[in-house]
Image (cartoon, rainbow, N blue to C red; front, side, top):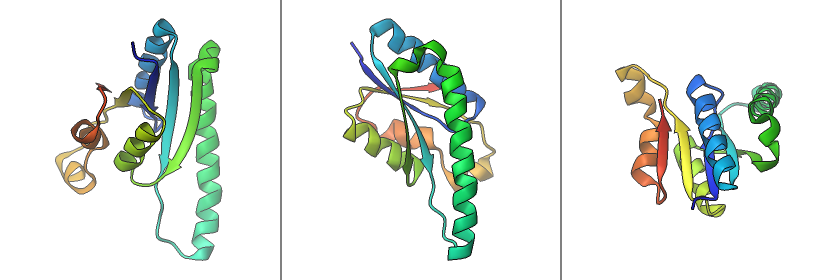
Length: 137
């Protein structure tokens, strides 16, 4: 039985659905949900990075508040982490490091140009993960 589920979270509607799914599943099994959001590094100068760090902190606090509200009474089965890196690789590294047994992701539709330019985190994880992956649409 799965006891450790990771939910990749970015604040999108599909990520919120993924979190609800992960919470429901772990509530039933008595497991734990690891909610992880990824901060992508940017190539900026020192002045820009100080401004960016403040905006990132504000964004992170907003996500933490959202996650806490969605978790509600299930907050005791939730661990929230932020990690830095390329989303797909960072989430896979986190899953391996924390012995995650199941990954849940939201899927956000993008146009074909954006898909080509940015790729798909869910597609990358589906192709590389060593554990079951559920993609919520």
